[in-house]
Length: 235
Ligand SMILES: [Zn+2]
Image (tube, rainbow, N blue to C red; front, side):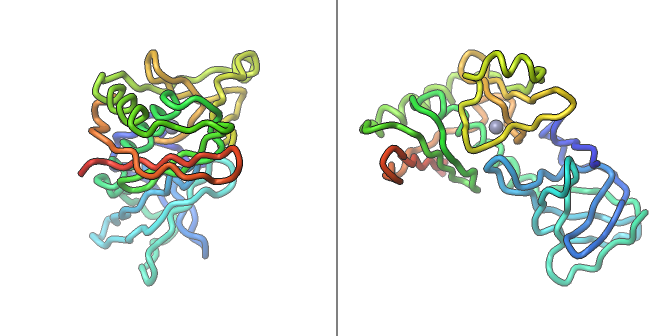
């Protein structure tokens, strides 16, 4: 199991760690700040710095088994030896954009009525699919509602509840396509105070104001009850 530093504090940009294993999939560390692809959010890129000053470029991060995180080296990178001490450092500029967009998509859930059937967090843009039977969605109203919630500066924080509490409140699960992280009888929720509460294991900003202004792009029909809403940062 890898200690998931990003789960307690998404703002930690680097940490020291020890190489546990290296194989054809990639590099496993005993602890990491690298978020692995999951929950609609892409994996982090960055570098591992070794004691001798050499640097291993990390192109992507994926899940292994359980809470294990696999750091995928860039093609041709020299690999560290198991046991080596490294400093794991993410590409923070990119990660922060992903955190902003990820948090923005939580707000979009609160603005649009209907169950979320899929979604994707991209670098500078994102999208969510909603099950909205026959409804025509008002792009201007969604854009205004979303930017209002962003500008209001709501606090964003994770909290953990137990499985029984989640079972008692099934309405908390807005996103049907993404399974929340569970384990040891606990589920991680992401709470945007007074706005949205749902299971999520991703990385988020601390306050909605940090997202900055966004615009709604195309609203596409993807199947009979599926509306895809695209959103992007206003550069
Ligand atoms: Zn989230």
